[in-house]
Image 1 (tube, rainbow, N blue to C red):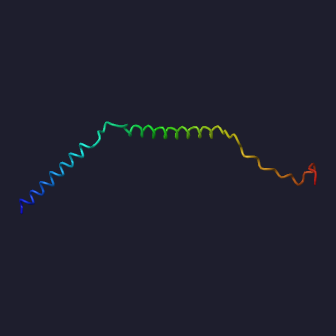
Image 2 (cartoon, rainbow, N blue to C red; image 1 turned 90 degrees about the vertical axis):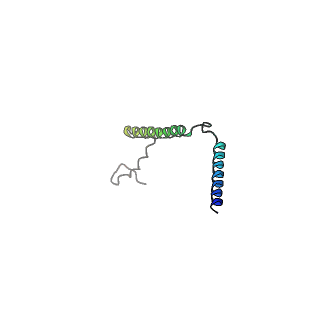
Image 3 (cartoon, rainbow, N blue to C red; image 1 turned 180 degrees about the vertical axis):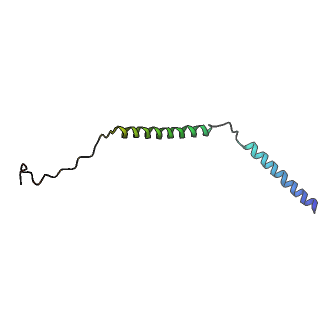
Length: 88
């Protein structure tokens, strides 16, 4: 009985080793294809750089007071005591 258990364990061990060897043999080499980490870091850096540049330009615009379309001035009500205003 012990011999049978030992043979079964040995057989499963050999099967597991052969499966692992086949998996390693079928695995594609890591050298193929682009490396994604540098591309991701460049993209993230560009996004952060654009955000910082936009913030700096916005703050400069606010500092100089540039406003191309100011809000219209509220209409002024005529003075009730002004004699120069014609009455309708």
